[in-house]
Every structure is written in C-alpha cells, then in structure tokens.
Image 1 (cartoon, helix red, strand yellow):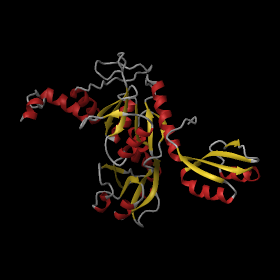
Image 2 (cartoon, helix red, strand yellow):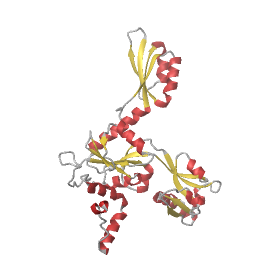
Image 3 (tube, rainbow, N blue to C red):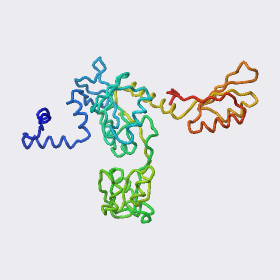
Image 4 (cartoon, rainbow, N blue to C red):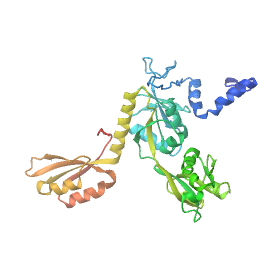
Length: 355
C-alpha cells in the first residue's frame, strides 16, 4: 500500500482516451528506461541529436557543471556480456559509481553517464540519439535497422546468427523457402528469405519468439529457426543442425553519427581500443648476442618492429617487443633455443598505438 500510495497507477482513474494514450506510450518499450530515470530524480534528458549534431538540452542534473549535457553511454544491464563489459570499462579507465538498484551511473573521471539498458534496445537508443554511444551486438544493430557508426569491434561474444533445421532434413536454405521459421530476429530473417522466395515461389512465414527459440521445432511451431550459435551445444541438444549462416556477430562499440560530443566519443574509443590491444599482447624483453640477433628478431617481430638497444657488454643487445598473449610461452621457448638470455615477460595495463 505504501508503494502504491507513492507511485499510483496513472491509468487507473484515467479517461478512455487517456488510457489509450498511455497504452501507446507503454508500447514504445525501448524508451521506458530513460523515462524511469528522469522520474527517479536522476533526470537523464532525452536530448536528441538533430541533423547538424546539436542536441536539444533539457533541464536536469546530468550536466558537467557548465550547463552542457553529459555524454550518455548505453551498457547492457545484465546477461553473459555484463561482467566482461564492466571489466572492459574498468580497464579503459572509465570509473563510475552505480547506486544500488539504479540503472544509471555517473562517471567520476569523465563527463559521462552510463545507462544500463537491455542489450536488444541499445542500438535503437543510439540510432535515435537518446544516448550518444553504446555497447551491443552486431546482430542487434542489424536487426534494429538504425543508422549508427561502429567505432570498435570488441572481440567479445563472438558467435553467428544462423538458420537451423532438424538434423538430416535440410541441406541448404533454399529448401526452407515457404516454410515456417521461428526467430527473435524477424527483420534479418525476413530479409534473408526474401532474397530466396522470388525464385522459389511461396513466401516464407516468419514467427516471432522472444526466448527458447530452439524449442519451436520440437514443439511443432516451426519447421526451422534462426538463432544465435556460439558453441552449438544448445542447438545439438534440441536436435538441430546449422543449415546456413545469416551473419557473424560480436560485441561492438557504436555511436550516433550526429552526436555533438565527438571529442569525448573519440577519447572513449581510444581508451577502449588501447585496453583491448594491451589485453591481447605481452611485452617480452631479453638480451642477445649480435650473432643471434637476426634469428631472435624473426621470433619477436613486434607489432611494428622490435626495439633494439646496445648494451655495455660487447656485442650484446637488449631487445623488447610485443608478442601476442597466446603465443608468449612458445615465443620464450624459441628465444631461449636461439641464444637469448634474461628473458622477461611483462603484462600491459593499457596502450596508445594508433588503433
């Protein structure tokens, strides 16, 4: 009762016209979180980017102290990507404080606010200019059919969107033209089969399902499905196999092309790209006699080239170079076998390499 008293349902005593209007607003699901933040007192403005890149600024406390709006960044609020993305932000030096049970956080070292949203809605928010940048999947961007700029491919959550049918029943997607296809990606699915249908006759029927798509075939709802595949374990457990790949996908950093915060967007892009490079490489340092230098340089070519410095000891050099993290152990073995001494391996915190 106390909660209802503080937060009355506005539709309970509304006129029929008023209820209809509220229903239309509620149907726009992807706008609801920003409205909720504004109502909670955090007051994230729905400042849109217009054609010339100038957003309309509303009153609120999401400014950087001089009246201009902070940059807004959409982050997946939960799911398998959440932990990896929060680690990525920390590694990129984006520090923030997130109050308990509030899906918005103010960055403590940049004029930036993080808005935690459903991953499936982030591309729409960015494309509409409700937030300036965001992190989501390439599949979500394509399904949302919005105009966004892909800034960085993050290499997280790599998988593929594929057509899946019962094992041994279909060998190519053309055999599914005119059949029933269940998916949570109706736009991409329809576009994929629209390219096949004109030549094959009947129109493919796309059925939208929000979850457990792979079960649709077993339950008789569909002849095949279009869904994401990473390891294939879930697909095989449902008695399905991959018939065709609609698109490969991974997590990406995207931006609204009309944002007025270009400099800050570029700073965030460089920080994230620098962290990703640092996370993928290690620094190896070693001493080697000049007679063996050329062989060791082949083993450690570096990202551009190794750094070679003369030592006080005659005919010896100190060498440092970046090596891919996964290749580092075998690289050390090869260096030692080719006469390198005092081999050390160092982790990197971050980098700036023109990425």
